[in-house]
Length: 120
Image (tube, rainbow, N blue to C red; front, side, top):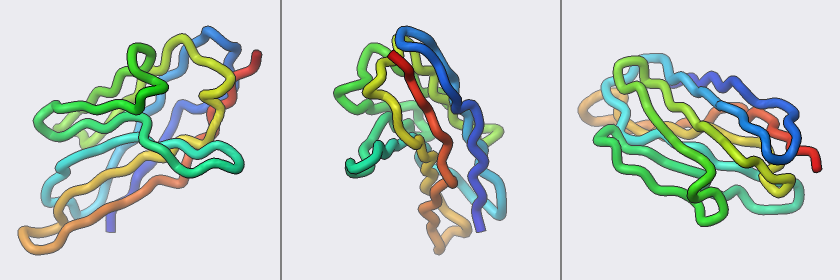
């Protein structure tokens, strides 16, 4: 079992910043990638940002240049720095982690989500 604990969501005015954190814990053999996805009401879940254990990143088009993902491999923790927030960034943000529980068994786990609300 892998648990993901998210923190850092909240209410912010447009143009402001927030920092999300997500820590993975449990019987983890290795973590390959961690990332953030978001889902706004009535919309599908979409990629925000993702980072591999080697440091490669990819971002959703709508957040490029405004959001930065980083990772502490030793702590299995991923961070999302969100700057220049817009009302359209309002959504529930979900942490995702993929890796291995053992040399044979993989995992793909999700956090419970944290609400980010950007007021205009």
